[in-house]
Length: 380
Ligand code: 13P
Ligand code: SF4
Image (cartoon, rainbow, N blue to C red; front, top):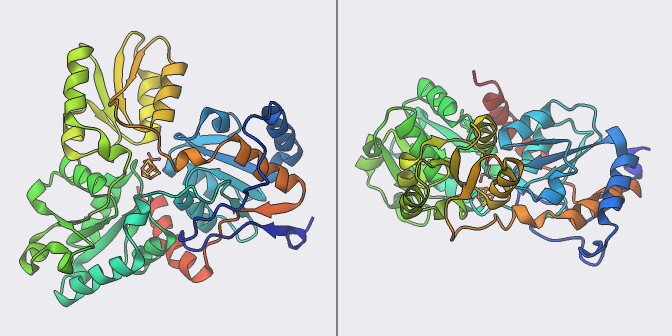
């Protein structure tokens, strides 16, 4: 079947700015008892034409149908390494689907089962704000010594800015390598948009101090900094954060250590500096999964990351004590938007030759975003 025969339904997202939900009224009911059977049937009919990617934070009901599960780095690699699948159904959030679209061939179509699955951190850096910041760096004569390092959790427009200005993308699993690379290319880093990942990596892996970092507030003139502070800084951190990981507290770390003697605290590097520096192990979601898999029977772990993943790890490792680090933190609401009804809807639509919720990054944005993403994939 020619792709041109496909009827395009749903709204196409542009640059991460559209958050419309296009499937209202067409979704199977969540209570439909045949949902699992419908998902299996659609998956079987689609066969090799479809690759389903599932981020570790997805619900179990979605992970059950993922061909590959992983963190954002592993899934970006998986998308780039799949030249044959006609459709990639990305069960994750919008910026991940955009990256998959950039890294796949123009013939391949990337689908996000619910367009409302965004990321609040990615929304904390807009292109206008980043351009303003860069203009200030240019006026101060430091832009040509500054290398942008942009976390995967960003819009394609910010990735394109990064590629254009000699920078690289990073994920939580390669931020240290990306920042070391950047300091070989220039003298300073503009780290976008997660202040915590940037700060934690600069201090724990690059041997820099907190005093080497400044925080750029996009809502204040000159980022709320003086010219002298900007000139002296080694790392300019963007004032963005994850609304899930940013909520874990040092009190929760202390409380769990008292409650479960011998417990090891394992957290994602998007957590605050105080939490990360008091943890026993810090790593990306894939690293968290591997750490628990390799842990000895009887060991105890308090995990500071998204709840779906922690619950799955506890269920899959009953021989270990696994608890959620902080009672006040909950699911990532946007990751959770992808559920079985949306996945069934996306797959059954394809079976019926309807392409829905395609994520398409415009060619001029994709060009430089791809350069930045490929720099990351080529990091040693
Ligand atoms: P990973 O890079 O570990 O997949 O994390 C992505 C993310 O969104 C964490 O909040
Ligand atoms: Fe974004 Fe945080 Fe959700 Fe990850 S967990 S997708 S950074 S809001």
